[in-house]
Image 1 (cartoon, each protein chain N blue to C red):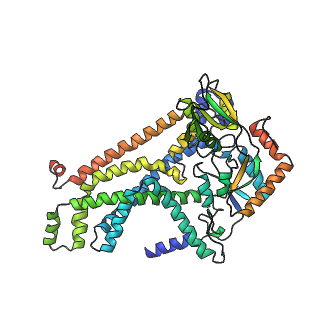
Image 2: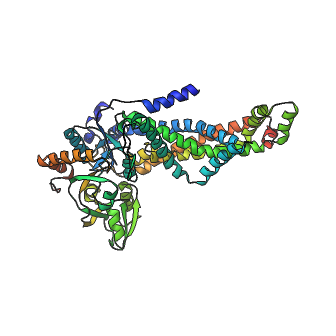
Image 3: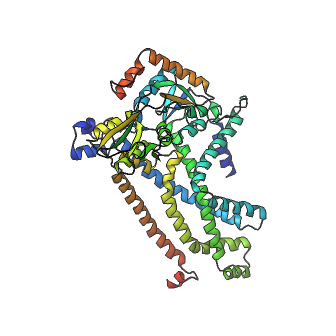
Length: 240
Length: 288
């Protein structure tokens, strides 16, 4: 028994010495069209395309990891993956904890969505937002009552069953829902929030940040980033 | 899965549904049922082992061991489960990586804790970032299993130590009168007789364990509740199979699954209870 335990311990501590440069890309997988799990069970969306191209240009071997939005920053810090690429807007609060690359998606408007025909008071009503997002921060600063949910999906469901008056989220996420809901949902307002979407990286990981910044530069320079933005967010989306 | 599934937009009715429920994403959903059953099958004996050790330690005559045993039972029973479910895997993971870092990369002089970051050298990562996905899954599952075993072990330990105290003293004294050593009394009289007293508490714990498995997702394992939520949510046109909010259906399936699991467990526990009552000096035992 002692031998077994000992060799198990040794195996735990001794394995592995050869490795290529592998980068684990952390994403939420629940925020289409930024990132979502497609019907093949794989990470898909704008950020999958951008991330794969960035990794190819920076000559990195990338692996995709899905993680809850709630714990996405703590798990980056403890090293479960090396980047956050999950539609995360660059804000000062986040920048104190992690580093961001330059933005790979310019700021786009956030939209209030409600049931059609509902009389919504955006300043005094009950507004849902996903927890720890810039939208939640914005609603908390108004006189409306903020109700937070762990996923964007649940905020929409809360509107649907009348739990809240409206939801505030990125327009890119809500507009497809509105247009495909057969008139059930309507947009009832718009605000401009945040400073564009960047890739989150540990503060101690300056090398990776430099590589990614260079790759984003090259994608901006040759227009391939704009092509992907148009592919996923439509012809009218803000580009670089 | 089927040949005709190549173009989902052209499908309708039964054909659409048959393709929809056989997408690779749905396969992950079905596999996650097995993952949950597997976790239950492994966590129960592990919790029993932790609990048994905890119970023996808390009844030990050596005060040092007794303090450890009592401390383990009291601490876990007193602190919210969710704290432990988050704490144990992260703490274990960081402890392993810390040790590996010290052993494998002695030449690295930079601090492991840099501000908010926990940085170990590449070779010390567990699993290595180059390891394939299933290694990460197995590692995560094992940490989760340890957390379940540790937390539920404390509850089990309390039930078992109560059951040990409930065995009639005359039974043990009879053993001593026959010249049994204290080890023999423990093994041949106390343990075989305590199960019937422990069973109600243990069966409650088993039911709670079944219901606690959705905590797996907190630990990064995609369990049935995660997939039900993910598959059931409204799907817009970016997905191949778009549909409105179907979460009620998916959660309905989960409800049936959990109820079936509970029902089967209850049948099994009832049988076990009557079997253990046999020959016991209890009401149930005399009624047999």
